[in-house]
Length: 83
Image (cartoon, rainbow, N blue to C red; front, side, top):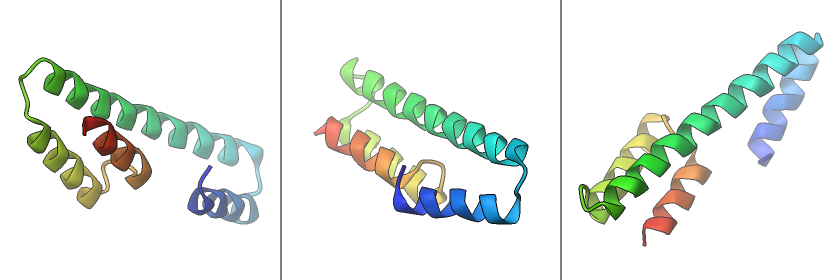
């Protein structure tokens, strides 16, 4: 868990003290990260098949970061894996 995620978690604990809310937040966060990994995996697959250039995949990841669609840490990891 990143420091920002840790702070968000602690804030939710203070502001929304019921465990249901905390668990829902954790589940939503995990789901969002799973979707992000899926998108990154799809881009890698398209590059590997020659259907998308590395440069185009990197631009897509940059756009996803800018729009907030992907967490920065996952997108940067995906970008590094592209080469």
